[in-house]
Amino acid sequence: ELSQHPQALSLGDGWWEFAETVLKREKSHIRKHAAMWYLKAIPKLSGLNKARVLQRIEDAGFEQNGATAIDNHSPRFALGLDGKTSYVSVKSYRYDGRYPITVEAIVKVDQPPETTGVICGTYDDAGLGLLKDGLWEFAIRSRSGGYRHSQSSKPATLSQWTHVAGVYDMSQSYLCVDGKIQPSAQPVPGGHKASRIPMQLGINPGRIPVDF
Image 1 (cartoon, rainbow, N blue to C red):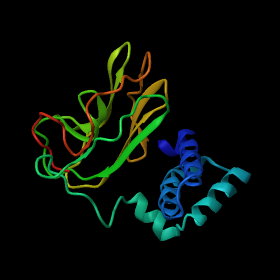
Image 2 (cartoon, helix red, strand yellow):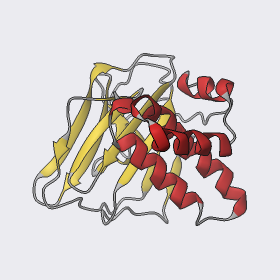
Image 3 (tube, one colour):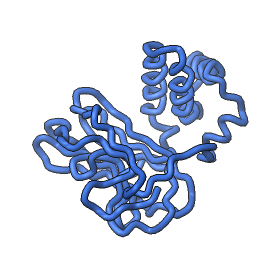
């Protein structure tokens, strides 16, 4: 489980440190994002480290009912993307692989996929998405080893909110589903090869749309 993996704590610390570099109006949101990772790390913490994390969760504005809401994956608002008339294209962002990255989303799949659908990325080069057999996948394009695919062990459950996260730590990629690291971590020899396609949310260019 992610709560038993040291990456949860380091991801929380990374987001918290990042929050200190942004404008005040953005700080609260990013601290809450850090708190989501801290909540997963708590079961394996003790002593001063646990006290530090609990204080940060409190500083982020989370109470017990807030933590429960996160664990149940019940967002009050969500984007409805059909991949045809509604999607997001981020033309100004291009991940070049020079730093670690976590791509995560809380997603609900409305219907069985007819083909591969992308949650975030440029899926034919890299990204987080859903395969036509219903498995979640995080794909990284290696400079020297082709595509590296980390997949879930079970298909997505329809009409249920699910937390999926793809992590690339500069040496390997792995996928987490509802806080559980999937047994499909992949080495990325040579590092990530950047895509020429703009970052997409909710659409896989040239493929049949998938509703999220």
